Image (cartoon, rainbow, N blue to C red; front, side, top):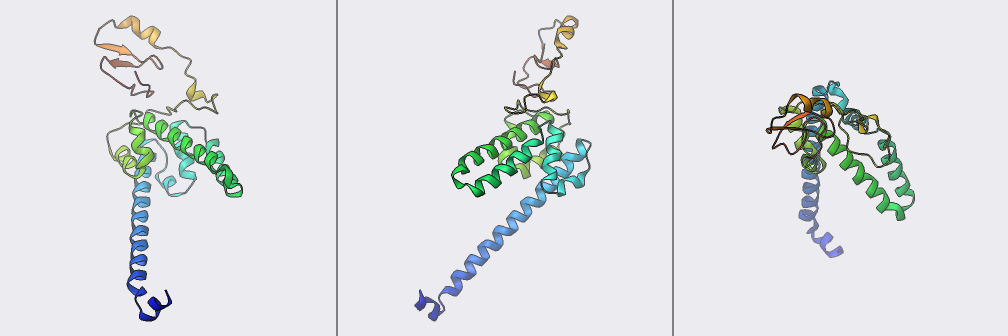
Length: 201
C-alpha cells in the first residue's frame, strides 16, 4: 500500500471514489426534491398547506392526518430507532416496526386517494415517483381511509359502524351494480377495489 502511495497510483482510485459519492449525493438530492414536490401537490389536493412537505418528520405527521394513520406511530418509530441504537440486539424488532409503519402509511395514503392496495407497493418502494403521480394525476382525495391498525384499533376511521348499503340496496336491484360491504358505496359489478374506502372486493 505504501508503494502505491509513493508511486501516486492511488490518485485515480481516490478520484473514482469521490466521483462516485458525488453522483450518489446528487441522486439523493434529486429524489428528495421530487419527493417534496410530489408531497406538496398531494398535501394541497388534500386541503393542506404545500409548504408542510418541506419539514422533515412533520411532513410524515401530515401524511398520517391525511390518511387516518395514528400519528403516535411516528413516536414509536423514532423511539425504536433510539432503542436499537442503544441495544443493537433489538435491531430486528426496530426494523419490523419501521417496515410495518411504512406499509401502514403507504396503504392508507393509497386508499385515501382512491387507489388499490397494490398501488401502495409503489409508494413504499418509490415514494418520490408515486407521490408525483398522485399529486399531479387525476386522483381525488376521498378523506382518511386507513388500513386496519394492529395497535391503535380504536381509531375512529377504522371503525365504520354505519351500514348505508342496507338502504341503498332497496333503490337499485340492477345486476350491473353492487355495493361496498364496508361503506355502502355504489359500484360497478367489475370493480375490484372500492374507490371510497379502498376495500378489496
